[in-house]
Length: 281
Ligand code: C2E
Ligand code: MG
Ligand code: MG
Ligand code: MG
Image 1 (cartoon, rainbow, N blue to C red):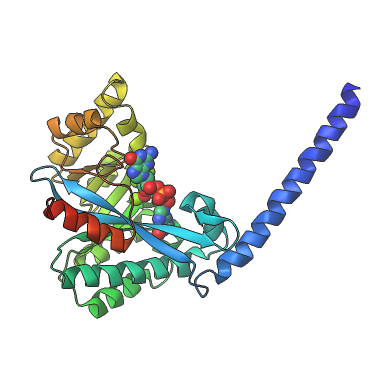
Image 2 (image 1 turned 90 degrees about the vertical axis):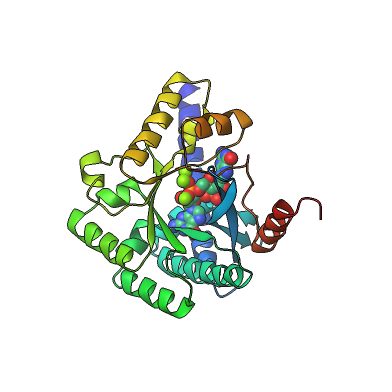
């Protein structure tokens, strides 16, 4: 009986593997058409500066309005897009859309940085720096509005090219931010030599503030490190008042998370900012 069940189990497992492979194939095909079909959208999550409680920036977060499956978060399609290099055109779409929104906010007199997440393939693609240069030139915005979020792993790859690209981006006036800091493998000695502007404390540490002693120690150490290096410390995934109080008390420069605002469509963001500036209205 056990043997029969084992065999049935293997067959079922193989069937599931085949199903997943098939689903991915279908999804990949649909992903390839999603730009033309206008199915992507960006949400923007506000970033609060603790010194004066102003919203000084937003992070752009992609969503896919899938025709049958509804709204998909990046975790459901970015890895697939990376496997098939579709991340390069998708990433270009994200940058173009983020720029359009930045132009609109600039015209409304809102000076906010717009942070865009990069994937490795996109950052390493030939002509990436040139494409950013063109985008900045055509955007006609004051320098410093664009921020690029990279992971520690991206900074550690193939060091000379990475360093050169980062310096070129920095020279263009782009701000560079290390995302999910504390979860990767970066060596501090190496980071010190890179032109980084911001460190984002990973939300896994933020989540456990202020009750978990280890997470408190790590969050404080990252804030201290950022401050010591002259960088901006940002906490991501800030949900509760207690987390916010801890981070503010320890000198974290900026906060981002549901406790400030969830990611919003461009329109809802504008309404939210308006409401925040004129609470009575
Ligand atoms: P990330 O860059 O670390 O983005 C922060 C994630 O935390 C977002 O998930 C955001 O919705 C979520 N978040 C915000 N506030 C809270 C909170 O208070 N609590 C918790 N638990 N989570 C919060 P999202 O939008 O699902 O994005 C996931 C990841 O996908 C991002 O992580 C980023 O690495 C990637 N991603 C998003 N947009 C893009 C994109 O345009 N291009 C690329 N290459 N990757 C993207
Ligand atoms: Mg990010
Ligand atoms: Mg992050
Ligand atoms: Mg994260």
